[in-house]
Amino acid sequence: MEKMNWIKDLVIAEQQMEDTGMVDMTAGFDPERELEEASLEFMTDLKTAFVEAAATFNQLKGSSVGTIKIYGISKTKADFMLFRNSYKLIFALKNPGLISISFNSTSALYVPGQGASEPTSLGPMETLKARWGAYGELIWTSNDMQINIDYLIRYYMCRFVRESTK
Image (tube, rainbow, N blue to C red):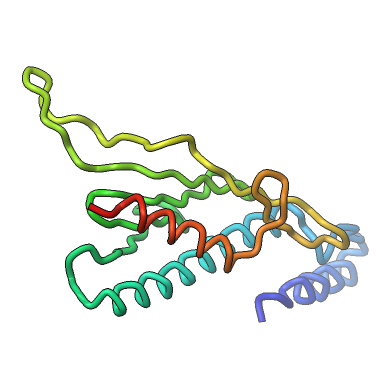
C-alpha cells in the first residue's frame, strides 16, 4: 500500500485546492520526501535480505562458533551491521540517497605503553547512491552502475565471510 501513497497525496492536495482555492503543482511527487522514504525502505530491504542470507549461512554451518549476527545501530533510523569474529560490515544511511558501506575490525591489539588499539577501518568506504531515472523512478547505483539487490547481497556476504574467517 505504501507504493500508492502518492495517490493519497493527490487526494489531499485536491481537497486543499477545493477548500482554499490554491493549487499545489507538486502534488503527488515530492522528490525530497520520496528520496528519504525510498532510502529508508531500501535500507530495510537490505537488512531483511542480509538477515535471510545470514540465517541460511548459520543454519548450514551448524555450529554456534563463527556465526553471523546482525545488529541495528542505535540512534539511527535504519543503519545496521553484520558481525562475526570481531569483524563488522556496516551499512549506514549518510544522507537520503547515500549509503556508506565499510568494513571494520574490532579486535583490540595491546601495544605496551599505548594500551589497546581502536577499531580499525579495513579499506576505503564504499557507497551506494540513488539517482532519478525516467518518470521519477529511483535507481540505486554503485560506481554509476545500476545495482541488483540480490547480487549486492551475494557480493558482500561472500566478501564478509571470506574476510571474517579466523
